[in-house]
Amino acid sequence: MIDLLYFAWVRERIGLPRERLATEAATVADLVEELRAREDRYALAFADLSSLRVALDQELADFDAPLAGVREVAFFPPMTGG
Image (cartoon, rainbow, N blue to C red):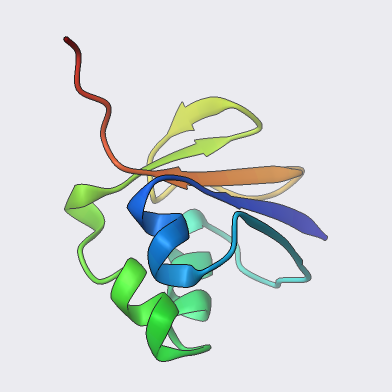
């Protein structure tokens, strides 16, 4: 099982702050494809990966990163400074 965390507009589009998921996905990109196929709200949230960042167990990662051994995946928009 993997904990999925959604922040900012990702959370708003999906309608959940977090969920647990059993997945066979090998990479973050595979997980995103699995989520997109679930419902339209996920497809909308993950429509443009260039506007998303991902962290695996609280470490920034790429979408081609493997999920083996990962307990938590967080999706969020890029941070802006100010």
